[in-house]
Length: 286
Image 1: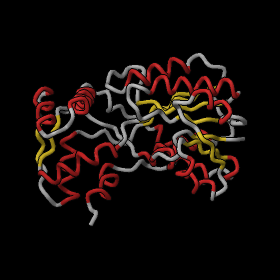
Image 2: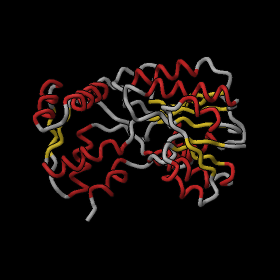
Image 3: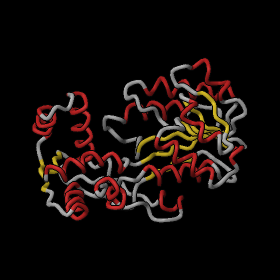
Image 4: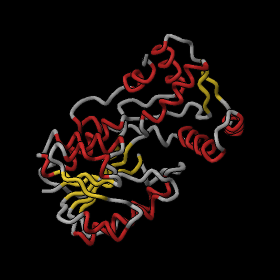
């Protein structure tokens, strides 16, 4: 059995490879990378490394030759991901992959946030393929809040337009471990996994956590969406990026990022990493 992971040199992909190597022999793992030089450390551990570029569709089937199980880690280029995902799915069909896992988003079928459309389009493609599919619907990454947390501690103010909306975030490492569990199982079947953290927190909870971790008071500032956008742009954030942040806060306010399940902790066999534990290293660096 050969297990391949796309985006293997990214943060999530690296965690998945490491988690797989805790479960299966290295010669059964294939690290697919756009820059194979960055994956040399995998080769040194006995992992097969192959060039794999989402934007070179003609080359993808050969890279998947002999692969039984494949994890497609969604691309990072928002707005370009769907054609990239389609190229990988088409290549998997040609190569005869038997099992295909995909990192989607929590409750993708009902989500309306800014990242939802491309995930929904990819899931629709995967509904009509000749192989078994696991939809790994990952909750929002806790690490996505590290920069916000650092700025809030520095300025003493946590700015949001998410209201009392909750976020059931999870760390990449926990989600990667769950992916490895699914990929390395004795048998694999089509399934949908809604993967949230163990706790759904509000921005008020986040502000309190930041105060406790840093020893500095952090005030929560709740703004309207329009005011939030204006503050971000005035602070030098490019408008498209600022719009994304505000749209995501709107999704949080609607409750779309706060759904709780125990699927993640059951898969990995231990509680998920807490908000405080996930943020502590970034706030206590010398």
